[in-house]
Image 1: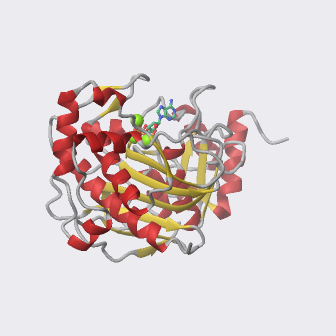
Image 2 (image 1 turned 30 degrees about the vertical axis):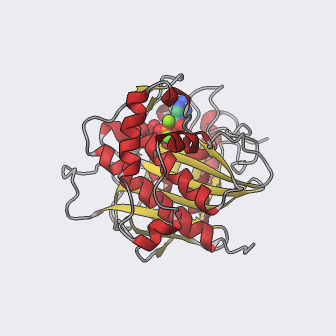
Length: 358
Ligand SMILES: Nc1ncnc2c1ncn2[C@@H]1O[C@H](COP(=O)(O)OS(=O)(=O)O)[C@@H](OP(=O)(O)O)[C@H]1O
Ligand SMILES: [Mg+2]
Ligand SMILES: [Mg+2]
Ligand SMILES: [Mg+2]
């Protein structure tokens, strides 16, 4: 097996691109087929459809690999109306490039095959072998609100993230565009100014490219912006107050001398935004003692930021550990910043959280 991961990267980018196109169709439709999961969080036909298409592409190319994906197929087996809505989306979404579509294995056979594919994302994860992590729609609440969301795919080998891809249909194509969660009033984006894919391979840097609809557009290398003056730095955090402690992040910003208010943005679009220098720092501070972050919420973004010159740790200063199962059970919160200032940010975090390293 080649260690360059060229095929994995190509398949992952095209799979994310195709799944993102499916989610855009749902985003622009007022009927999103939303149901509430056991933990009261929402899932839509877009989440299920995107997961089916990504797993189909992985199965066609890497049938022996394991998959950790967010959504489960159980509820769909007893909800024929929802299943049919998803199947309508899945069977009618394709890339408009025949070679790319062929590489992804073409169309899914039927609705039952689609349910089986969705169900393949049930691996327990762990420290050995090849495991893909999928978040078919990260930031479902943002997706429903008309804000930012991301389609996320990462490959881990023996617990280490090797390939990461994020599809962010509502971020500007322009890497230099200022950081804002606003997607503007033009929800149709006829000018094509929004929609970007971020990717990284371990040791090979990070890049961005326009989302597109067929063959992959050319990528450009991205890098984090060096922070010359903390006062002018921008930091981003979750929109949902239940996902990150926004009171503590405001205190941390104050301690660092950051004067600008945070940019609140849903999903791993935050990782992509700081990786390309549109923003500087991403803070995610635990809101509960029991919530464990999910690997699919961080794997791709962690690699993309690190390959762009950033450092990503939890609030204790430990690297995110993707080798312990479906969750980041060994970590608490996330601090992502340019490597040169990460220590300074972490110190402020620990002072505010009252857990300075001893
Ligand atoms: N309690 C709690 N604490 C921390 N994180 C949580 C919590 N509950 C959920 N989640 C996960 O947050 C994912 C959404 O990402 P963000 O929090 O960055 O975006 S948002 O601004 O809150 O929408 C979201 O991902 P999706 O479910 O894919 O949307 C969740 O996995
Ligand atoms: Mg998520
Ligand atoms: Mg999700
Ligand atoms: Mg979810």
